[in-house]
Length: 172
Image 1: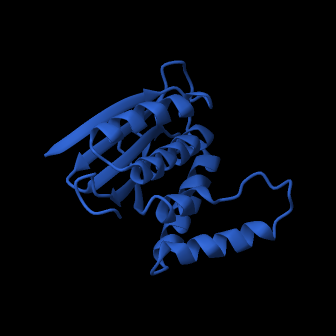
Image 2: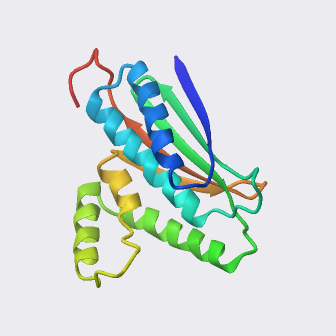
């Protein structure tokens, strides 16, 4: 039986922790083990952070939508933010997002992508503010398959699909 939760998150950094707490409580109520809850709240944090960084928020009503669907052992997290597709920076972000997801998928094991990204980050100057680790963490630590699309309304929908068993199954 499918269970769902939908949150609306203001594009403000302090809202990420509020979303983590609410989603964590929801996932615990769904019978997920502590490690799975921790992994999935990290996934949500990373995706909301990206939504804040790369979203196009023009008015106070603009927000990030977070949808969580549980169906058996499958959890789908979808984070949706407004996007100005006419903006060159937004188009560049979409290109980079697509390349990164395809790069991660190019590895048989997301751990390999994670290690390669850590090596790359370790070679960068300390003042480099963008590590690029978020999506790789989602794939590896969150045990997730990433995807995205741009809706007809101009929203960026990024999803992460994970498989975690509940308490009444053997530990992952």
